[in-house]
Length: 90
Length: 244
Image (cartoon, rainbow over all chains, first blue to last red; front, side, top):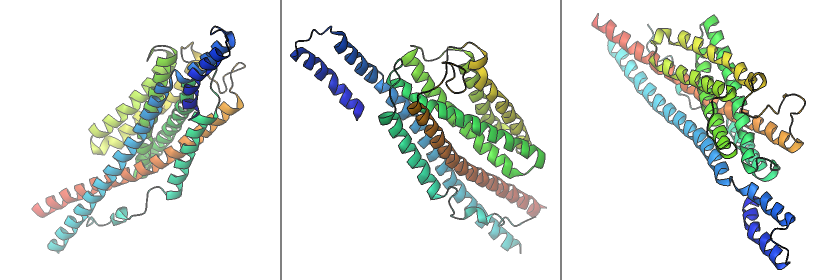
């Protein structure tokens, strides 16, 4: 949320500087804009990195849970079948 | 010959991971995300992309821990020949692949933003890639090897993987690498500001908790896989017995 506020702050900083009749090349203004740009420049890549990480984690968890379900079903079926065969065998 | 019902305890509905453990892992992960995105200060040179560090490094640490757990379990299997150690080794080694992929992908994205390249074959990155490659090979060998020799062959492969971990850890201490110098135990000029150190420490804790949950889940599945294989084998034995 704070980052989004920072994005909104870029035009506001520039507008404030203009209203105060400060030259746009004022080092203080440029520094402030640079700081904000540094913050937001790679924001999409940051979200992309965390998105991939969580996708991998949840994907793996989902795969494990599906595998467990399948195995449980298969074991139950096989146990039932084996019991029947042993009963028939006496 | 048993009648195949001895493994009925496998189908109990007791969860592999207690709910409190899952809850704690989720809570720690949420707090970690809050710390990363809203609390910790932005690094002056790299900017916001440096925040991947608080996930990239814990993922690597967890992969190292998993590798040691898998390796020690493999050694115990070779000594005691108890299949529970093989199950633990399999579970731990699969998590090495998961966390190494996370580590490498996040590092690669950081490299793209900061270096302007996705990948370079320097010592740190190459040794990390070799680690991932060994454990990926472990999974492939596990599926391809004959059942009777599988556990022993895989144990040897994962012991090799474990031996690569110190190399990955030491590579940017021994060699000159493009990868940033170590910030923990990296000498005089290394170190982190307190808020960054705290976020990293918390990240390691959160990631370890998450790993423990995944490990226990995977271990349960490994046990079920073994039980299914056992039942199949018994079924074949019964077929042979009836034919005879």
